[in-house]
Length: 73
Image (tube, rainbow, N blue to C red; front, side, top):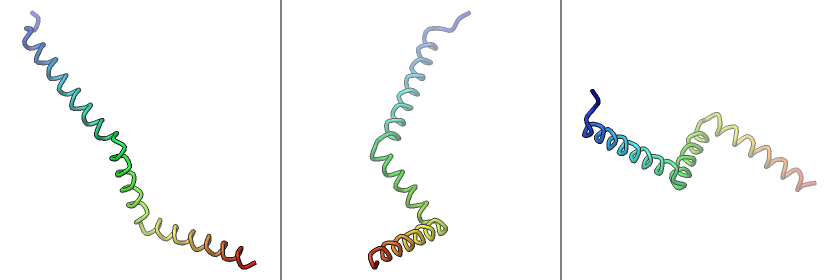
């Protein structure tokens, strides 16, 4: 014996609600402002790590020395 139409309609409504919820979540996640904010947080967290921070400082010192060397010639 098959399911009654009310049960099928409830299942369809539940599926619709889940789909709407998923679409709302995707809309929030793909919002450009949210993507920029998330990327910024990730970069700041990465650069705050000591090994990355010191590597960036070292590269800056080397580039600065090369620029000074070029200017003083």
